Image (cartoon, rainbow, N blue to C red; front, side, top):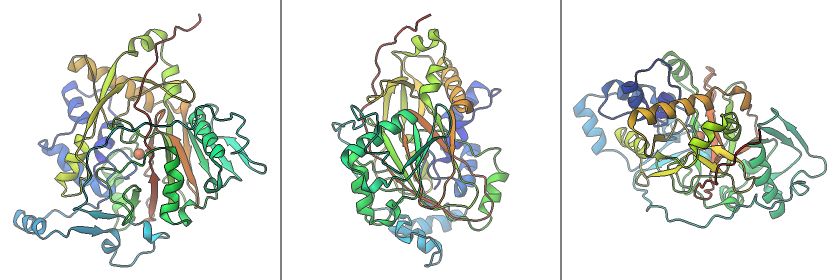
Length: 420
Ligand SMILES: [Fe+2]
């Protein structure tokens, strides 16, 4: 559960930070002892749904000889249930993470994505069936739905789901049965929306590498230590945007949650784009930025955790167009966006910092979802970023499963001047 701390460090960049320090935070280096110590120290407490998204527990610091020996004797497969002493109070123990060091996957090949939200019936008659209720969380961002069973949707209903989520950015569905179905059935449902992503540095339920787990068992005072070492747990990011075809319609299924706390916040990148001046919008069009997974993989390796696929980086447009809605969105996130192509170092850092800060402080285009048992949250990863909120100190378990269908390669459409 560690490497996401990289983004937690970099996501909130103080205005007073010197440019050279900014660079360190945007791309923490393994040879930076201060940053590395901080990362390792905090690694136990990180929420794996954040950018580094690894769920392996941090190991205690050991003398060099002992560490060397431990590495040599390292078991090939680590199981969270063993970390808990062989028994668990997890509600869904078959979803507990397993880290298989022998599990390796080849590079992704491009695939043709079908955008199911495009052309879907905007009346949502096959999704919002009789007896269902849709409530908006804020005017622009986020909704909550009751009275709909996602696993029972027809293909028309699934198409409308993709469109609704693209429009609202994030939608929480209550009283779902996805967690209670066999894992393969949940994957079959999610696979309708795109090719399943396999996370490069994540543990997974045994036999189901496509499931990404967010897991914290909450014991041993970890939370108090976490809060003692940082001012805020907020770490805005979009998931795995370093991929050539990052995720689109994405699902998070709650398995165990604190009674109060551990919400997830989402920010609307279409609104973040809309708030910019026409002059800046026009300037951002045509620019691309590098999204990198190398720091995540490097950090996982530094902790002797799994790297299931070699890391990649890709350049994507700073402003992307959504294929179903036609909306333009800022496609930048503090987790993985490292530099803007064609700009000098200082220019890139300052512009990225502005955009990341702009996205992060826009509470007037954000929504916060409160979890409850059997909730499934669906968001469009192309037009949002999100952050877990680590604010509970009760020791309760927080355990979620993510289904992560990949979508199209991000593309942009020309800037359109606004009417005066
Ligand atoms: Fe995430």
